[in-house]
Length: 172
Image (cartoon, rainbow, N blue to C red; front, side):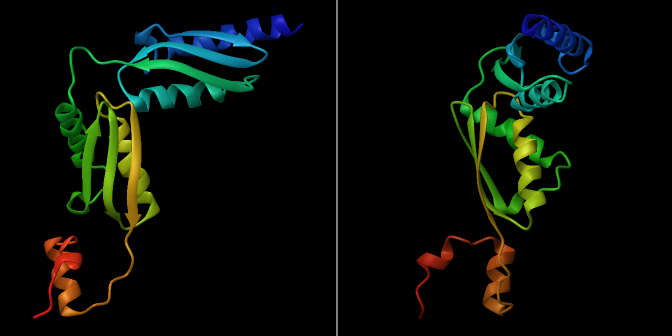
């Protein structure tokens, strides 16, 4: 009986994968063992991999998803390319203040550093970075902005983005 249920789930999952505009072009494959879907294949971005996993997890009867989908790009992509792609995604209307966020990429692992004003801005930054070509993982090291005291000194430093100056400043 479990074999029949797995076969039915596999059929549903494969139908969704093949007909979905986001995943259909990749030729992804699904296997099912005791209601757990095992996905294999290759996609271009981390956001596609995550989206497909969520889509499959929402199918009736699916008890879990083992996402073995690999992320690959057409041609060589180095860390500089990945960083550039992430910055482009962040600029593309993601609702993220780029004055306060930095990006570093190490072999497809992207680190977001800096400050955000809200959890929604943090989530928007992570989601935008995941859309970039060559990203295999996004590590958020973003900190929530705390209310600064409205002194002239505090306003000046927030406006000119001299965050590191706080520790290096000498009082005269």
